[in-house]
Amino acid sequence: MGLEQLLHQGLAAQQRDDQAEAERCYLGVLALAPHEANANHLLGVLRYQQGRSTEALELIGKALAAVPQSPENHSYYGAALHSAGRHQEALASLDRSLTLAPGQAEVLNVRGLVLMALSRPEEALLSLDQAVALAPAYTEAWNNRGIALRNLARVEEARVSFAQAAALDPNHPHIHFNLGHACLIVGKLGEAAEALEKSLKIVPDDRAVLNNLAVVLCEIGRTAEAMTLFKRHAALGGSDSAPEPDHKRKHDREQKAYLVQTGLSGEAGERLSGPAINPDNDIAAIADRWHTSGPQVVVIDNLLTPAALEALRRFCWQFPVWKKSYHEGYLGALPEEGFAAPLLAQIADELRETYGAIFGAHGLRYLWGFKYDSQLKGVNIHADFAAVNVNFWITPDEANLNPDSGGLIIWDKAAPLDWDFTTYNNDEAAIRAFLAESGAKSQTVPYRANRAVIFDSDLFHQTDEIAFRAGYTNRRINITMLYGRRRLHEGTQINELVPVVWRE
Picture 1 (cartoon, rainbow, N blue to C red):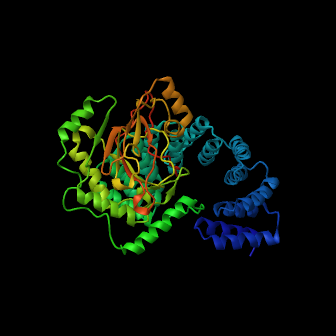
Picture 2 (picture 1 turned 90 degrees about the vertical axis):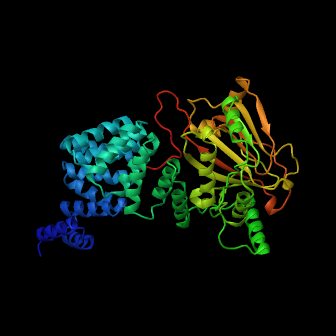
Picture 3 (picture 1 turned 60 degrees about the horizontal axis):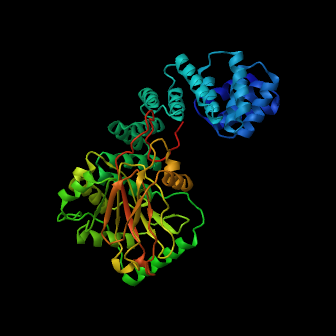
């Protein structure tokens, strides 16, 4: 078989995605003619498609040396450089390809990705705009254009771009994922749920889709469904192999010993047939305190019914959901890691229903549990990414060695609306400087079992000093539920729960 015939046969195989046959043909050509430009280029493209960037660069480089004026050689060489992380070189190669042959939509699309990798989002958007203008049905360019717009914080425009991509390719799970997350950010929750449900239908075990869809369902009031998705996410496991700190290993040993001693097994945290939120509190008086207090802080004792309190304690003691470690010495239980019992959904829903005058239309945005070492520190000063914060404690009072502390300290100053999440949630130095300059005053709410503190999430707060008895069931446990969205600084579009990696 001649060289030309082998090349045609290899190209036909590559076009029908028969990579093994294509490779056999190209290698056959190169065995006879090692410097044959077309064979080097086509095998290099195949290696690029297989993610073997180093080999792709070597092969396409040979083709480029033989035919330096080939725009196709320059374009694939640039794409391979981009895959290898050599973005500045990639840009030069792609620009050379466009100089030789202007108007290549695919090259403009890759160029947009390279510019995003170089943190030049405005130029990336311009390149992607040119790509979709040249090829209006180019799905990938519309999707990447959405990512560029999102990187510029133009999320509503990004949503429109993702929607265009989804209309062009309704079976692409990554596009529906991007569309759903953009809709979540801008508050189009029904559209977010629809897009993410489409993505999940195509790829049922996608952990990121499961997590984001669960977050959306929480906010629109489908809390029980959300908990089911969070549990599916947790069951798939993760890839975190970081070494566990001493305080995490100590907790896990205590939990195992507790389970052996008590003989507990089976289900816990199931939905109750009766109420979870105590209906006997003076709900009207509590709502009145909320609306007349400044700042907005109310304390509710006996929040849960006795049955709910006992069931929630059993779940928190029994189940291995305390997976996230914090360097201060406490552990976190997150819904996507199994802290997603039906009882928690019941409590979250009944809180909104019972105290509707406080929560209004605010949906549940997120929840978690924290469990503390008896002697180590609690949560540092911060504000949260929501409108209303519910923080309640479930460990028995006998565990607390100081009934005047162990609870929560809340300041009367809210995080400035133009601060980003990293600043108001983590920058302790900036927060304390702001509080000192503004003359902020604090109030301390002492720890009590089954006591809830409901407050404006913008208010800075931190865990009070902890002194609890040693022993597994004496560890301080608090549950936090966040409702609604934080107010936004004028001109800001993003109101995001957590960062996400957008998908090409």
